Image 1 (tube, rainbow, N blue to C red):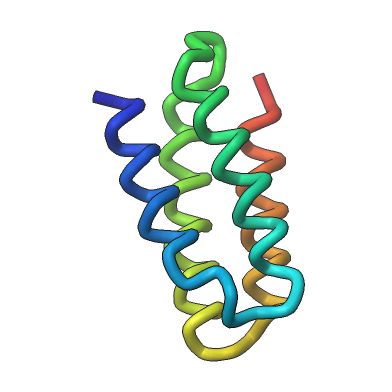
Image 2 (image 1 turned 120 degrees about the vertical axis):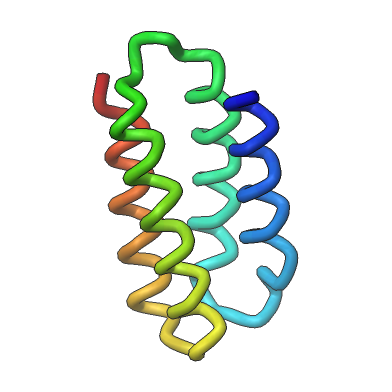
Length: 84
């Protein structure tokens, strides 16, 4: 179930990646990290939930054309996925 949820978010988030400057690279990194985190039982659920919430915020910033804000949110989400 966790893997399906993360995969869905990753597909949603990377669907329009070609529109921003540096955010597509950050989104790709998040997708990879999210896939790894799906199998990491030591990662707290609160970190996964917070990371996904940040990705939703990043998507909104991306759609608004704010590449810097998008990248910052994705990087913050990445940090949450790397904390164990």
